[in-house]
Length: 142
Image (cartoon, rainbow, N blue to C red; front, side, top):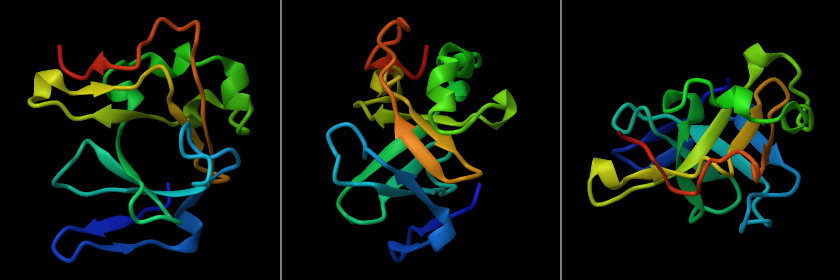
């Protein structure tokens, strides 16, 4: 995936145009935000920053869903992957928005509404998995 970095010291964002992920519908609750950049920083790994390219105040901490639930990608219906043009299971990429708690055990991820990304076309879509059994606040530890 095309990279972007966040310079922690200067808080400057550096990303190229080809690192922008496009969301036709925006994210749930943020329909006006249609362009995001996935930013990496060793200090917060394995979390990443999901920064709106159009609004400096809209950003989310995200985690690759399969880091917590190894078979998670298979639990997302094929039609959802196909909606962003991903037909090869090896090319699936899904992130969950993280809610940081007072301590690590209280931190959760929204596994019911993952952000799916086609990193070849840089198209993304947030979906709601209503019949999955996943919840909005799934513990990240334990």
